[in-house]
Length: 213
Ligand SMILES: NC(=O)c1ccc[n+]([C@@H]2O[C@H](COP(=O)([O-])OP(=O)(O)OC[C@H]3O[C@@H](n4cnc5c(N)ncnc54)[C@H](OP(=O)(O)O)[C@@H]3O)[C@@H](O)[C@H]2O)c1
Image 1 (cartoon, protein in one colour):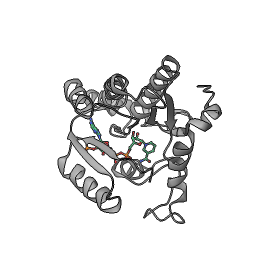
Image 2 (spheres, rainbow, N blue to C red; image 1 turned 180 degrees about the vertical axis):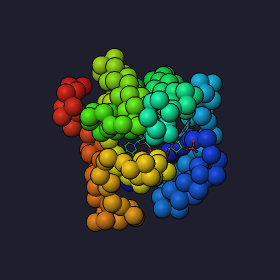
Image 3 (cartoon, rainbow, N blue to C red; image 1 turned 120 degrees about the vertical axis):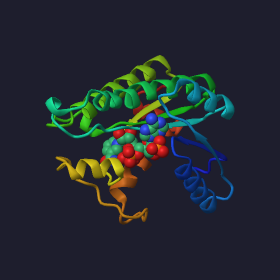
Image 4 (tube, rainbow, N blue to C red; image 1 turned 90 degrees about the vertical axis):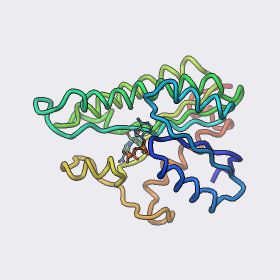
């Protein structure tokens, strides 16, 4: 959509990455898609991927984890804590690597946060809400340290992905945003945050975010 010459995507599952590469390259033949199998909580793997790419204009920190939705008293510690590893530590490793290769001018960092981090606290969501709030605060810190980089915390809506399904199955308190396909008219609630992120990434609209560079 933004006519990027190269998009690098990373995740733990090669099959998903290759399917995404195929889909993007068939819709946008002028765009080259690079894939990296890497866990965002693996510092060395993250660093290696960014060093291979070498130069990044836009980073989307999307990887996220929601622990099992059970009360604290029934939670399993490793699973509860994993949300902090992926949503905070992973975001930190990815951001640290990005800052070393970010474009010197007009670089953009988009973090997928969640409205749930700012709403009332809900039963069974302690791990997810607390870790996403911590992650969001981390990215606010990155923003003030790097005034030359536009840092956006974007809530993508409530979408029926694997994570979204976990919430729905546990009786999610959040209303779901309908959107079965990426047809604009159907999925407007989902595309709205995408368009907002794109708009706010334009240098000329930086002033809306309080940036003066
Ligand atoms: N769905 C919603 O309603 C909703 C609402 C608000 C915010 N969000 C946020 O939006 C983002 C995406 O959520 P989603 O709903 O698409 O979640 P999802 O269905 O669970 O997908 C998570 C994605 O992150 C990757 N990932 C997970 N752990 C990773 C790790 N340790 N290292 C590298 N990649 C990892 C997964 O790929 P692999 O498994 O192949 O690694 C997958 O592509 C998250 O940050 C989430 O908190 C989602």
